[in-house]
Length: 334
Image (tube, rainbow, N blue to C red; front, side, top):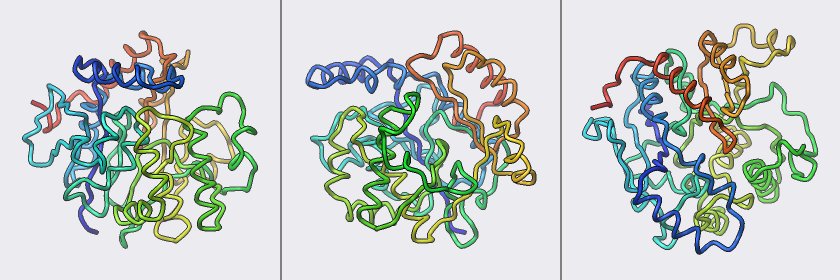
């Protein structure tokens, strides 16, 4: 197995210089961005610090760690550490006219442009964490094929996979719309229906596939890179990559079962599986109970998702949990 890098996207929404740029761009946007521009999407609760602690504790085999930012470096970060590389948006965006950019989906179309990025890498949002000791084979098999973490044991054909209007109201958002548009794009070009849903967790990826897809869909990649705030029209570049890997047998679908799922049938099928996942929406009124379950879950991956509806009290619960769960400073901190 070759070297495996990690890529993070990071933003500090409290940074005055960054905030001025965002406000200036918002004034020029003529569509409603009340959701995509919400401060909750950009709030820094120091999740990155604790995610790096999870890497340090549970994945010491990682090669380089690239942190993609808009001219920002966390004050606590030892950016001179030999494993750490700070990557500015100006280093990866093909067109300066696409900057400044406040759209995670746009930034994700550009991450394979990172200089010296390994062919094999794992993508993290800063709210994603490892929950137990790992090895490279948890993410890439011995022949280098990525594990594509999916949310179905068996992907049954269904109309909602390709029709946004058939989704329930709770699942009608720009993220889900982008996933469906990406699935339709893939179907129309490659004549293949992909019914798997990709878990909202870390993603093992191949740089060469992202490069190929950028040349295959240059207009769609450029259009998304040009969207400075997220919309339902955006391409989900990393989903597209994983759809391609599934279709072309370059990667293997791996069911990442939810520890919080009470289905008896799924528990039977996953009895001996170590591929576990825990997702917490921080707007959950029972978030304290969720964290208590997570504490004992021994999950491979967990994600703590802040939304515009997240209460300040829930953020305090999260911060206390992370400080308790990962109490030891990582080698990446000052």
